[in-house]
Image 1 (cartoon, rainbow over the protein chains, first blue to last red):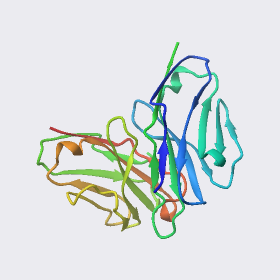
Image 2 (image 1 turned 90 degrees about the horizontal axis):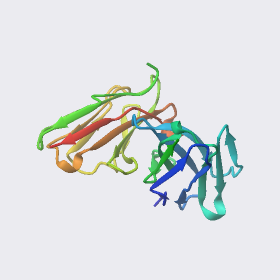
Image 3 (image 1 turned 90 degrees about the vertical axis):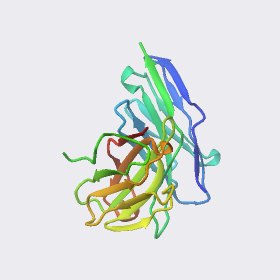
Image 4 (image 1 turned 180 degrees about the vertical axis):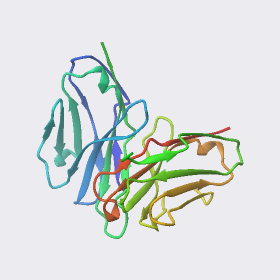
Length: 117
Length: 115
C-alpha cells in the first residue's frame, strides 16, 4: 500500500527566512506521481507541482523549489525568502499509475507553515 | 465560474439525519473524485467516477455513504443516518482525463458538522 509521511506537523518562521517541508513516501510501484498542494485558510486545495517517478530533475518556480530523490523516497519542498502569504497547510501526495482503476491521491497529514513578520 | 464548485459550503446536521452534498466539476472533465478530510488530517479517498460509472468506491467508510453521477457531470454524495464521526470537510476534485490522471482540481469543500 502507498503511504506519505510528513513528519513536520507545524513550522514557524520569520518572513524572509528559507524553509523546507519534508515528504517521504512509500510505494511498491515503479511508476507514480508525486504532488504538492497548498491549503490556505479558505480551505481550497491549490495545486503546486506534479512530478513523475522517472523525472528526478529538481525544479524551481520563483521562490519555490522541489528536490526529488528516489534513493531516499523523498520529495522535499523549499520556499525561499518566505512571505506572510505563504502561511498555509502544505500537503504532499502520491498517485500510482494503475490501469483500470483510478489514480487516486494518497495524502500526507500536512505541515502547517506559519510565517510571521 | 471555471472551477469546481460545491454546495452547500457548510452543513449542520443532527445525528441520524440524511444529508446530500453536491459537486459541480469543471465542464467536460471525465474523472471525478470525492475525498473526506477530518480535522487536522490530509484528505482521504472515498470514491471515483469516470463519466457516470462509479469505478472505485473502496474508500467509502460504510454503507451509509452513497455517491452518484447519473449524467456524467454533477455528482452527489449522500450520507444516511449521519453520525458524529462523519463530521469532516468533503472535497470534490475533477480531472479531464480518464483514470484521474494528471492534476486534480479541487473544489472548496463542504464542511459537515454532525451534532
